[in-house]
Structures are given as structure tokens and as C-alpha cells.
Amino acid sequence: MAEYTGWEICALIFAFLFPPLGVFMKRGCSVDLCISILFTILGWLPGIIHAFYVIYKHRKFEERVLEVYEEIP
Image (cartoon, rainbow, N blue to C red; front, side):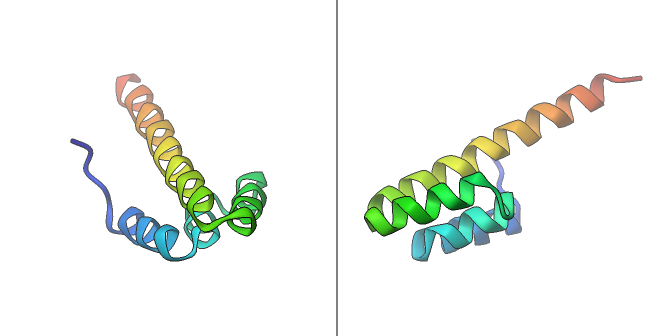
């Protein structure tokens, strides 16, 4: 089970209420934010699914980067 930080929990809550805000909190102003806005305009549920995916995907990337840095002597 993954442990989430307080910031990630807030991002998930905001992603449920307003998906682009959760994406912005995790990725900043990027293409992911534009895609999230587009999905939210098309429907609230696609926006939520995309926001949760972006938050989870970016979390996995951060974990892999930390593992690589821990292996460096």
C-alpha cells in the first residue's frame, strides 16, 4: 500500500472536486493541465479519471527517481 503525503491527499481531494486544480497542484502549468481542462469540459467523470491518473503516474515517477538516488554511493 502506498503512503501518500499530505500534499498528495489534498491534490486528490481537489481533483475530485475540480479536476484541473488537482492536476495543477501536482504538475503545474503543463500539457497535463490543458488535457484535464478539456476532459472536465467534456464531462466531470473523464476529468476526474484523468486527474487521478496524472497524480498517480507522477507519484510513481517520483518514487523511481528516489530509488535511483538512494543507490548512488
